Length: 124
Image (cartoon, rainbow, N blue to C red):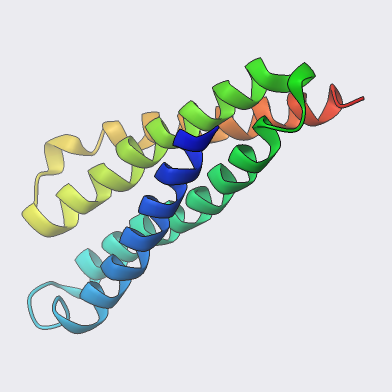
C-alpha cells in the first residue's frame, strides 16, 4: 500500500530528526530521565517505521494476507502515535496525564506484530 510506504518514510525521517534534536538541542533543556524517555519514543518510532516499510512492501505482493497486513500496518501507525507520541509529550511538556496512553500504544504495537505473524503463517 502506497500510503503505508509514505507513512513509513515520514516516521523514519522524523525519527532521525528527533534523535538529532534530542542529542543537540535538548541536552541542556531536559533532565537525563526526560531525554531517556524521549529517546525511547524515537527508538520505537524507528523500529516501527521499518516494520511498516516491510508491511508496505508485502501488501502489494501477497493478496491472501491483505487483511492481516492492513491491520498490522494501521496498528503500527496507531501504536507509534500513542506510544511514542505520549512519550514525547511527557518528556518535552511534562504532561504526565498522557502516561496511561503509552501502554495502550504498546499494546497496539504488539497487536501489529501479532497480525504480521498471522499474515506470515497464511503465506502460500
